[in-house]
Length: 193
Image 1: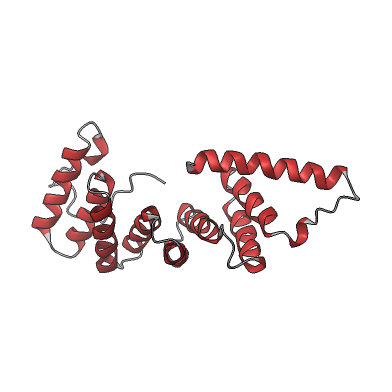
Image 2: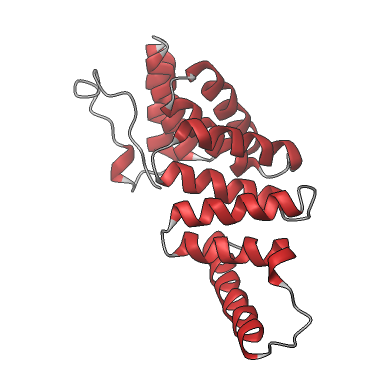
């Protein structure tokens, strides 16, 4: 499932469970102890861009069920919430934990690379971008962001190669066209949130 579809389904599920819990006071459903309740409510908060509330519920969900089958998704969503608030220092460990749980989800690694880049851990960002590119050799965004990481490390030839590769992979994306004279003082261009 895509993240937006998953969020829409989570919002629907949350609203259904909330209606059940408020309409039937004798219901055996006890949301106070159910980690999925907090997880789905967190996704609903995230969808509404209430990132602090989302983070609090994700933390509660993980406290109740740290080894759950959705722990990696909860950590990933928490990392995205922190990123959307510009708090990359807290986002990076969330992505690290999510990626540690489920290595096959390369987008966890990609998000960690972007967070590392934003907090100045550029060498680690390059390593993660390398991992993403090995698994997704046509990921123009990964090449583009790695180009800025290379630039930050003074690896200008590698940076130029990455920028050109990104443009070649996605020639219709105007955001990937780099004016080399204008990027001298630019640390990074964020393509999406």
